[in-house]
Length: 190
Image 1 (tube, helix red, strand yellow):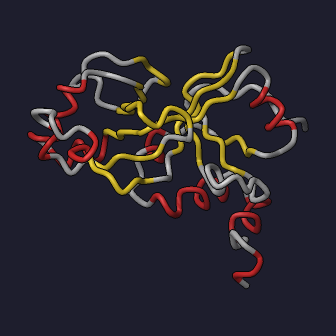
Image 2 (image 1 turned 90 degrees about the vertical axis):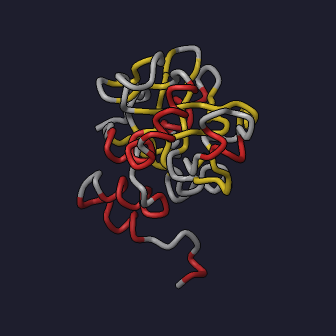
């Protein structure tokens, strides 16, 4: 069985244990777009030390928000990405799948965070930066088995347990991946 070198939007990429780039070691990336011109995604399991109020202190609604910001990848760290699953409350945005949207109105995010912080925390993620691949780059990395494609899961995209997301996604690939998921990140940990 060959590896599909095209990854549908909404799919996950789990970094293989051999991928040692510190930006992506044990990362789970949500693919937002993949075309012949390149690919774009967000690392789901890298919470930053910042909250929305740290990133946007002047924003009327977000300056009191505890909504956590994640590091979406090493590209464009000065940009803010919004991932959500509440299109009825957050105007705008582009659908990635039937139940995931990218982008939206920041004021709507702020109002949701202010009025219903639990719902916002469970359904909205803010990302600083993103992960990007140029033409043919992701296909080359997939062919070299740097990434393990995994099925889409809106629920997993918003899991609170970021440190264990990589292990959970790899284990869900099937029994043949369980040993891989249980390997320590560094053999010296044994």
